[in-house]
Image (cartoon, helix red, strand yellow):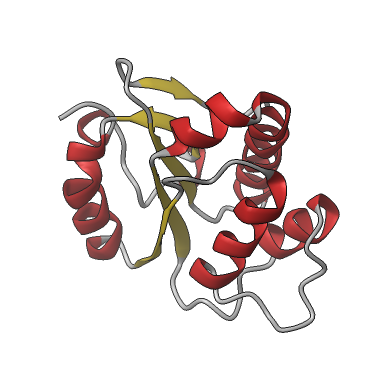
Length: 145
């Protein structure tokens, strides 16, 4: 196992953004569910821009109808996922490379938002993990402290 074996998904201080192999998703989801985290899955196959990313995330995260469809609204939503039951949250984002290849600036902005969200959750002692499947070797990117 790549990232999951070294992480305790119940610990907020392990939260962050991780690049993993899609083959790890089932084990990550099982570990998150065992730790009582809400697991959210989004398939980003064919996602080529910010607008499509935000639409897919709005559906996957069951964002409220008033979701603003912009980066600031996403930040606000990821800081407060109270409508999704669980002691924390695990986002499993498959085919993230499609967005990275098509819109690197949007991908980088999205990574920054995920890092910020993980840092915010860590400050609240709430586990927040974002796992992005990418074709290269798994790499962990914990949030800035």
